[in-house]
Amino acid sequence: MASGHTRYLILGGGPCGIGAALRLLELGIDDFLLVEKNDYLGGLATSFVDERGFTWDLGGHVQFSHYEKFDQYMDLAFDSDGWLEHERQSWIYQYGRYIPYPLQLNLHHLPDDKKWACVSGLLHAARNNNGREPGNFREWIQATFGKGLADEFMLPYNFKVWAHPPESMSYEWIGERVAVPDLDKVLKSICLNEDALSWGPNNTFRFPRRGGTGAIWKSLGARIPAACLLINSEIRSLDVQKRRVTVAGHGSLEYDALVNTMPVDRLCHLSGLAQLQEPAAEFAYSSTHVIGIGLQGQPPAILRDKCWIYFPENNSPYYRVTVFSNYSPANTPRPGETWSLMAEVSESTHKPVNAGDIVELTLAALRSDGLIGETDRILSRWHMRLEHGYPTPFRGRDARLDSIHEYLEGRSIYSRGRFGGWKYEVSNQDHAFMQGMEIIERLVHEYPELTYSRPALVNARKNPFPYPEWLS
Image (cartoon, rainbow, N blue to C red; front, side):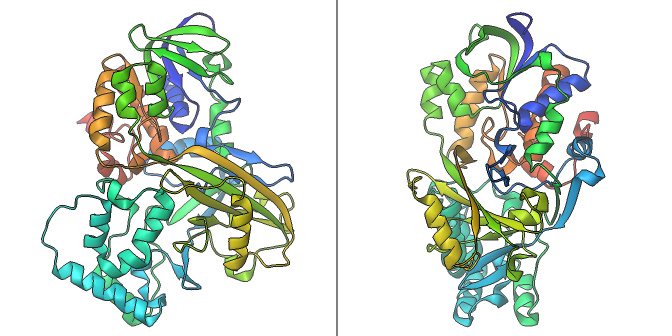
């Protein structure tokens, strides 16, 4: 750091911070500094290699995209040989059987009594649709799916993944995230016994051949000049009036504009200002436990074509299990001789988790659910807890965010990214990366941000860059 002042200060080196830095470089601007508290870049998209040689992501990340610009950078991260292409195979394990996801389009797999409960609930919901706006996520689920699907899957699974009661959440975030049932398709699948496998924006995806998801951001982060990086350095305080931060071990640093990608509740706490700390203290989120199990041999036949599996029932602690060695054989130390499963468990004050026994509870459930045999040789047990796992779309979120943003942006602070922006509907890697790029365009060229301000628009199309809205 050549001086105590920088034009653009970026806090956090995950996809959003890297996106902001790369856009500045594209525009020929090198008067910026990216500060990252860890000794690596990648944020929640980092990968780790355990002591037995197994590679683990911080959750079930896959690469799919709403943006041409994001695709271009993925192509820059690796050449074509560096990627593996996959057709998504996502499943639900319920009633002792595997059911293609989403459940509402594959009801023919259910036991007859459950099948009828779901269909009759859907019919009742359709007949009684009075156009009344739901008051929360629970009401939206019940009005959209009916009692059968709500009770059998939607309510138990959503509590399991969010770790917050659905009635405490809003529903406006949903968009493409949930498959709204189409009665014609539902009844057709039952009558013709047809599987619906290709729903959703990520029905195909790619994954790095080596190094896990983190290899992408390690590659792109290497494009940022060392003079513009300050890693292994934690922000200790923020003076919003003087536009100054204190960096552990580096003293104070002033800026013209600050792009924050750390969790906005933490940023507000660092400010020391009650008018920021009080609304931020009400922000809801869940923590995530990622448990990796490395095994000798190869997966059983039932798992060899599966990407990930959802678990709505209470007999297991995890809400999702990824057959991580299916993403890339190189996620294991000896491809062809070893394989791996990665489970995710949510935690909150509404759903406490004992970190000391969660790995053994997970192993017991994996055996009970038939993913691991009693005699399978386990080579590795890996566990990491992420304090900030999912940004919960809590009721009143947008009003509180707007209030915080209005105050911060009036003082040249712009908070974006998965937890910097706190909008789950635009919190995937492609969204976060483009939020970083777009905030730079706003600061440099006064272009409007689309991803953060208009999630439904960007999620409904493949977005060119520059955006048509910028050129009209």
